[in-house]
Amino acid sequence: MITDDMVQTYRADGFVVVPDVLDAPTLAEMRGVIAEIVAGAADVDAHNEVYDLEPGHTRAEPKVRRIKTPHKVHKLFDQLVRLPQVVSILQALIGPDVRLYGSKLNMKSARYGSPVEWHQDWAFYPHTNDDILAIGVMLDDTTVENGPLLCVPGTHKGPVWSHHGSDGRFCGAIAPAEIEAEIARAVPIVGRAGSMSFHHVRTLHGSAQNVSDRPRNLLLYEVAAKDAWPLKGVSDLAEFDSRLITGSGPTIEPRLAPVPARMPLPPPSREGSIYETQLGAIENSYFRKKTAA
Image (tube, rainbow, N blue to C red; front, side, top):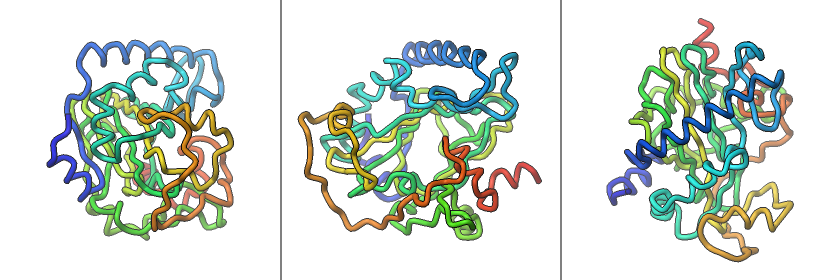
């Protein structure tokens, strides 16, 4: 599924798109499952362990902006990241033995899907090495109009910017004034439904509000090399090892690499998903301010 040129693009830019990884029947099955899960939001009034809700959500008009840890919500999402064609891409990019770190399904509904401010995933979960990436599974055709992921080439080789607000607490967003030159170089990650993007854990990225009349649902998986250990620690080794995608048996020998890191502490003033965390320092917003203007 991935060519040598694509691998070199990932190494140079910190991201790459692999087209048509999933076929039409798989996409149709996934959309059906997602529709069932979203329908369940009509029974809730607030964020919970499954749903992160858009502002304005009501039971009469459910608005979901994220399904949390979908690989725990439905077996289909756990199976997808273990498909042979997906595993072969992961092994080409980060090595033979890999582990699922987490998952989420970001749902940008037409005309109001929430933005995600500029950040690096690495700021949220630094590890002992950075052979870590995020998969973006495009469940809809993704264009520049419906709020695509925006990535800045080469930033995976640069600094880790501060993701803290003026109060000194972690807020999961970078002050736009610090990255003006980088924002100007951002590239939209677009493709047909069924394509997948892969971006390095240190790549600077964000996404604007969906202003089109088409939805843009993006299923995200965070995947790490087996020997990458979270700097915040492992509380349950058995659970940690249960997330191995390839490679068997416990691993208690982290690989240490000379990578920059800054801990996401003190914790955010608004706990929750990245949407809630980023609201803890509105001065670090970029897309929200542009939308308001």
